[in-house]
Length: 282
Image (tube, rainbow, N blue to C red; front, top):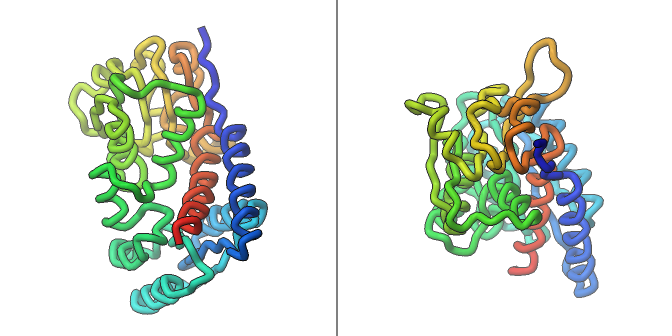
C-alpha cells in the first residue's frame, strides 16, 4: 500500500483563485484589499518568505504594503510601525515576519497588532479565540492544515489526533483546531515518554516537532493520515526535509503530505484567505 498524496499545491491554487474572485468582488464595490508586511532585519530565509507572500498577494489582487526595517531598529520603532498599520484604512491585515532579531520582544510586537487585523493569528487575543472556539484568525499553518484535511473530506470528528510539537504557531493551534472539530487530541513533543507508542495510536498525525525525519514509518498506525508540517535543512542534502521520513511513512499511511508541496503552500493561501475575510468584515 502507498498513501494518497495530500496535494497542498493544488488545493492552495484553488484557494488562491477563490480569494482572487473575492478580492475582485470587493474591488467592484470600491474596496481595495491591503496586507501590511513588517520585515525586520536581514535574515535570508525571512526575505525569501516575504517575497513569496508578496508575489502571492499580487496574483490575488491584494496590495502589499511593506515596511522593511534594519536589525538596528529599536523595539519602539517596530511598535510604532505596527501602530501605523493598525491605523491605516488601506490595510486590512498585518503580517509581522518572524523570527524577529535576537533580543527583541516578539510577544510585545505580535500583541501590538490590532486583533481584527491579526490575519497571521500571532497575538494572544487571536490565540484565545481559537482556544474558546470563537470567530477569529488562527495561525496560518495550523489553519492551512485543517483546510487541507477538509479539502480531502477527511473526517476529524471522533478520530484520535496526535500532534507532535507544541509551538504557538503550529502545534498548539493545530491541536485546538482539531479539538474544536471534535477530534480527540493528544499533544506530544520530543521529550514525551513512550512517544513512538503514542504516535502509533494516531488516526491523524500532525508532525511539527522541527526535527528532520524524526518520525518513521514503523511508528505510524497503518491507515493513519499523516500531515508533515516540518521544514528542515540537512547538510549535504538538497531541498527541505520534513519531520516524517517520507519513504517509510508512505508505505503505511492512507494519506500523507509531501515536503515540499504539502502544508507550505496552504500556509500562504490561508494568509490570503484571512486577509480577504478581514477586508469583508471591515
